[in-house]
Length: 521
Image (cartoon, rainbow, N blue to C red; front, side, top):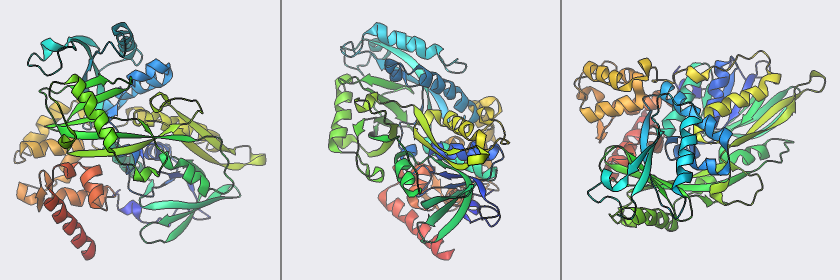
């Protein structure tokens, strides 16, 4: 099923006589995860997202599927175990998007004693049943980098592994798989009102571009709107909730990479927070994140000078090369919707776990169609959150299928034995005319679907207009036709990261191409 087709309103589902089983509100990682899982269990699903898929928090993460090493300090063992198990799942079902990443934690005795870190890493190695991910090893910092990379006062450390992921593409692939299994995916569509109508929900969905309103019926609603979860509840007539989200802004900066090797670094800040410095593409570094209480509109979140200085200050404490704010070439901020447990905690200590609130009664004598809202959560645990959400809805859908997503590849992820290296060699052999970097881009972005993106192309010229860097018209058309891409930001910063590498003039030229195409449609 092509993605642009599922933006077309369906005439066969959702009416009074033929309702959807499930209306999913929110096109972030939790929403698309639930839509995919539900569609695979045989439910009819419509997902609406007021902006673009992954436009909010889900494209502004640290790009990790990780257990959450520091969560052990807060005794969140269940969450850490669940997250550690999910690392292996993602490596198997999306091996083109993900890879194990070696992280060197530089020990700073002022923050935590060495024995405590070693104990935490021992638990990290053993809680999740590692299979493909290497375990922890001690590191002599000054011997591993004898050329003077790190300040000489730091001599000890540990190397451990987590999993790198393209977060926005993980969202897109879940949405595409949901659509392949029959779900309707509607971007730029917001829920403006919902009310119970007997045993059904009646919901008004508005196209934010045209203003047109479509009324649909659904047997259940899942509210996975993340930072906007309470806004959605406000649109639902008669909804009552005691749960709240606590918004925390996290910002990252991108700089030129200043060390050799494929490893990243983990640095302990003076406030005991942990900062990650990771290789990003071929020669960039991704640094983050901050944790700042946020009380504005989530869509308005942006990095400020204090955050930049905070991250730069941590870098300069550990590395001999001294950085300054002018070294930042790109930055982004996202708002994490953490579950508010009313505890008086700093932002870093607030739980990353998730909880649900269910408003509905399955008893046929007093039936009340369900509204299930998710509070909290993180990128890593989205698949388990989806399973748990549907478990909560089983009393309302007793004939739905069983859980199935744990071993099911995402689109492009069906690489034999999840052996990306071997498959990549075969791909390059099949497309010998592709320059090395361009081939690498298609491999990690599209996996086994790369051959479909390149169908019938015999040379670079067949990829049509070159917009700059590794970006060609053929790919832009694919993203518009198959991945709900509408704007230049959809394409340049969420479906891909070409926008980081294009000049302003090249971005403007691509914007002109989009406008011309839209005018000719």
